Image 1 (cartoon, rainbow, N blue to C red):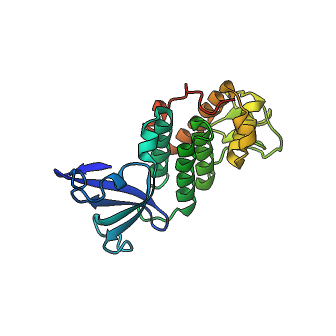
Image 2: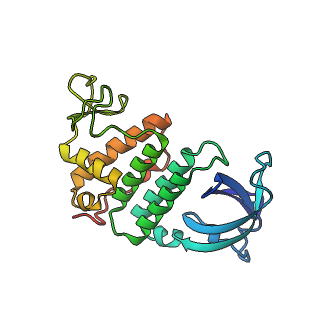
Image 3: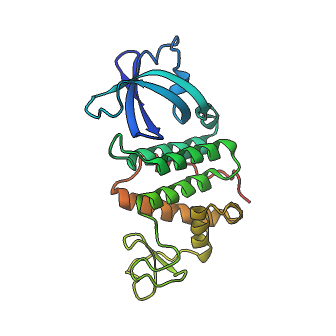
Length: 242
């Protein structure tokens, strides 16, 4: 979301059919705006945009109408850990859609599901975030190897993990400086990727911290630069911990 002139904003949206798009919301910063609150961050909305979205040569579209489906922003804004997790999810979704108008239905579904998950507070916010990051990386073709060696493909839960190599590595392929996460941490990563919340929710704080570190390192290695929001994620909260 960017300011435009005295009363307008440029809104960045991840859409179901058209991927990431940007559009101007006229007068949205005025208190009298018809749909200003509906265009706040983290909302699921039905939006009408002026012009042909198939015309990629158009510099900037204009939002004509916005209807609420589910607005998560106000609820998440009252909970700092969930707000910071939602910010990291939104930034990741933007970074994984470098080209505007390129459809990315799977990423749209993952992002919407993560926002819903944060809003209902059924699971710890860091678990929801890491599940999203792992699945989003899988969708982008960057899934870390967890049940086989990233280098030679040897099956098994290997003890070492090397981000530059692509994930878990066997003793023969292990490069110097590889991490040696706890087996339960790799089990947690597998559970989050598969959506096995019974295992994920039973994890302890040390597993979650180690998992988050590996997930963040793997993601930022592939993005080739860090996410601004990820260091701000509040991992001290015990929400949803067993």
